Structure formats: structure tokens, C-alpha cells
Length: 117
Image 1 (cartoon, rainbow, N blue to C red):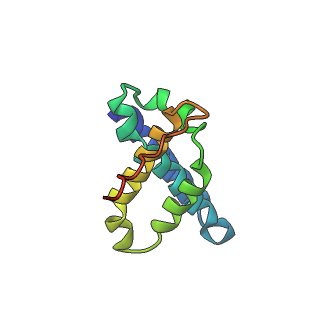
Image 2: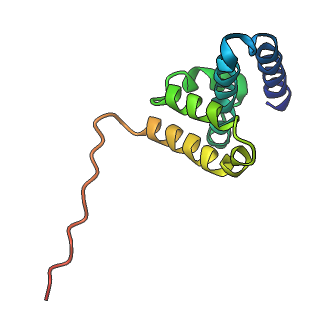
Image 3: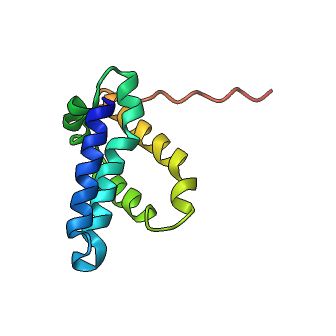
């Protein structure tokens, strides 16, 4: 998993450097978000035994993946904030994976409050 993930990160980084200066840096933000989406969901997928090359397909089906990738990409532009937000982004990626595992139409039963005495 480490070699494949490192090669993928290197390829995305080189692609970002080559064409990231076009269109006022927007491609660089999108590439950073794409890479972040795969990195921040990797902890949840590794716990489930899904390594990197096999992770690409389920990540592409996650609900909210585009907004998460854009937010992660934009956070890379802000110094120090990008480092401080890493735990939040990993938690967000994990929640996206957990939400995708819920059966459709899942309704949680609210807990009824205690009767007042």
C-alpha cells in the first residue's frame, strides 16, 4: 500500500506542478483535494482491509466527495491552518466512509425522553 500510495502522490504532485500554474492555480487546488480525498479516507479503508489501488473505486462513489475534495484543496493554501486541520479532515474522511456503509433508508429510532416525575 505504501509504495502504490507514494507513487500516486508523486504522480499527482508532478501533474499539479506542471499544470497547476494555469488558470490562477485552480488545477493545483483540485489536484491537492483529489489527493487529500484519497489520503484522508485511507485510514478508514485500511481498517477494513482495503488497500490503495482497490480504494479508488469506493472513494469515487462516496457522497460529498467533490465538496470534501475542494475544501481539502482550499485548506492546503492556508499556512499553519492546513496542518491544524489534518485531524479534522481525517475524521471527516472516516465519517464519509462510515456513512457510505449504512444501508439505504436507514432510520435511527430516537430515544424517548424520560418521563418527568
